[in-house]
Length: 143
Ligand SMILES: [Zn+2]
Ligand SMILES: [Zn+2]
Ligand SMILES: [Zn+2]
Image (tube, rainbow, N blue to C red; front, side, top):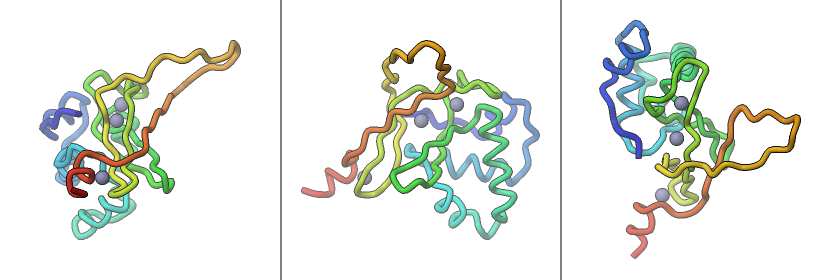
């Protein structure tokens, strides 16, 4: 699981100006151990931040190694806080993600994606491994 960190500290570490809106977006994302989908963020922050601004903030965060994006089963973008190893344009989020088919939440797992042999001449820029199934919370609620 990703450690929840202080939004203001994260912004400082990445030398980004801390605006109220930027802090709010990070707060929402850090509030849950699971990743948060863009529509969910829009719903939660809609009254404070308009869609265009939200979109711009998410892009800035992704560019600066603060958030990584995971595309779920439905093609929806989900965002999770990066490990502290991520910097601008250099993400190191090669961990396994878990997409629950019941609640559709995405979790960052602390399991590294195993190295794979890519044929010569191909250059990997990112590697995604998503496990699909039932998350801990949902399987507990079942019985
Ligand atoms: Zn990252
Ligand atoms: Zn679930
Ligand atoms: Zn992740």
